[in-house]
View 1 (cartoon, helix red, strand yellow):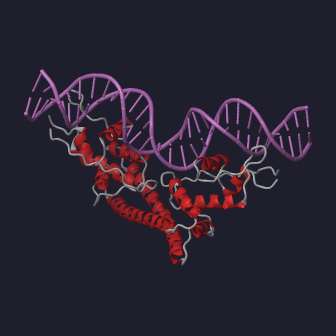
View 2: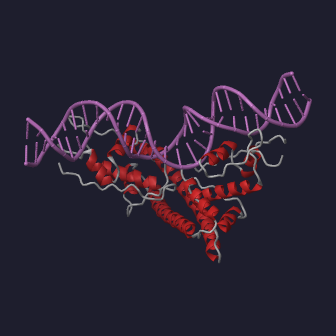
View 3: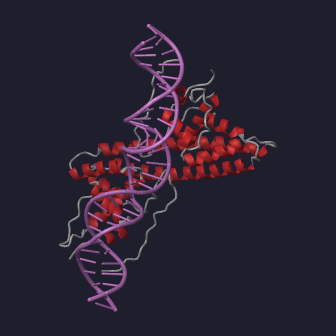
Length: 158
Length: 158
DNA sequence: ACACACCCTCAAGCCCACTTGAAGGTCAAG
DNA sequence: CTTGACCTTCAAGTGGGCTTGAGGGTGTGT
């Protein structure tokens, strides 16, 4: 009987069998056809799809976003502008993070040089150094790019 | 009585009161002194510390790592060589992170360019574009950069 | 005196992306 | 016919970093 077993697919895609079942369970992957005894049977298309999922994930997309992409993709006719937009936003986020990290690295490196030259380096400095750097950093939350943590309550003064 | 209430600290630091209590509970923040009725009382130093935590977090450090930094930092009198050493290691970590992110950005940007250039950017094409790319992409796992997912079992052929 | 915005603790829940475990069915080789 | 490597399902656990809820105390303005 034709078709790969889940373990073969797992091996070829570099995922685990439970992960593949999990993907099916959350609707990321279409339900595989079954053999008469209930075994899932796969074709090469699934491996390609899993590799797509892996790479999309590696590119920073959440499973939710990937599902959205695949849904649009399966619809076929829908334009890809949303997907493209999503990718652009990810790129922006990544670049901003690189900038933040670079600034931090410079600050840290400068501080270390100061310390290295210092005869009597105090540890207390560390907090102030890092805490006292320039503008407030935006928190980069790779998996949830929407900033849903805005709390600006007006407290009654006591 | 002197001292900020937890809500004031929350507002000024941009965190929430429960989060601050949580940080205390996991030993990230020192236990605040209490008023006679049990209210936590804070000084400005705590706000600076929380901002340090926020920034370190934004830079990709886990609370565990931040705790380590703060612990050494608080040790105060102990020779600073350890802190310095830690700082060096963090600098290395930051630089490695920058390199990883840069590679990641290049890959993503390349995908987007490919995609942008496409006259008929069908989502199907997109999938194939990403799925069909050359070398395997490195998975970018922001919080756990260690690649612990190598499974290469040898399956018996059936 | 009362409302109301704070504060406290402790426990449980949530989210994501899985992983692990238990209990059992299937299939090919020896 | 047994062994053992596979497959099945469903449930529960993991980990990081919180958030939410219940139940109850505090402090101030009117």
